Length: 424
Image 1 (cartoon, rainbow, N blue to C red):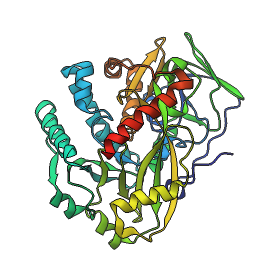
Image 2: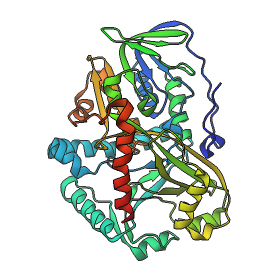
Image 3: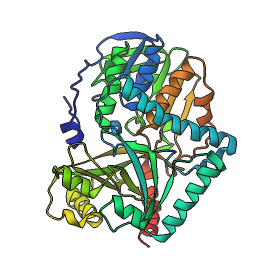
Image 4: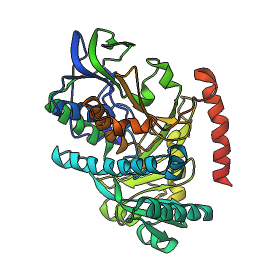
């Protein structure tokens, strides 16, 4: 049986959940494909409403991006709010902004209500690497205060950043005390446990091989099938070949994290004194935070080829030490990666097909809170209140050019340009 990726998160998981494969034919109200944060959140919200729910997971609950990510809980979306305003207009953009804030509130509430032990910590800094970044951050802060009434943001000078972060890499930053970070696998497993406790049935090692669409969709697995009134597709970058018309809207992109050996509380807190999460705003960005056991978790690098970069641990260590040269000689104990689903415009892609097949994908690396909200909005829509879920359907999403065969080389060329822009 397949296990979780060899990561710090898997090594520090605090729940050992196990569910059988599907080996029967079921009839339920709702079938959910994917037991990550989106699927588990939808299952929880629907089971709490009394729906009969089955969740089909091709590997293990939390196996994909939900259990491998940087764990950074951040306001807004992967595209900036100004882009959303251009795409859907100011009124809809304000509603989408409010949903992004509610996503963080919902996440904290579920952690509290279901006693999910996932190392929740507050605070996040968008860090400026070059002068134009500070200009961008000043614009963000001004726009979010003026147009969206978001007041907690603090523009930090280089000196103020240096007062909390033991690195000379940054010229300043935009700090949000309302954002934060979590242990993503423990958070996901906690949601799965809560949904199962509410009555949802989970089946692991049960990949969906095909879907019959119609008045009562059917999801087929190698040894069983589920007939339902509503089908939810929550596999994101790991859901390929089942519904091609939505697959064309996203690209699976590899991203990577390395974890140091434990540094000890004193040394770790010297690096990030207020325990915030940090991300720079390069297009190909670095992001990092401390773990609860005083390691530095440092993310960055991307791969568009479906192949992990050569000498990955060494490459990640080099980037880490460019930010924190004082960690020269510190061992890296874990290095891992996984796929995120990105859209062309970096806005999330939610919608439905045939009226009863719902999907949420394309979080573009900005999903730790929004995925939970996506599952909740799908549950709302099934229960009869679809206005907020359908709001996301107003965001236009072009196909990736080149089709499935050529979209990767096309994206590699585009990303090379953005990487060059970062470097220059």
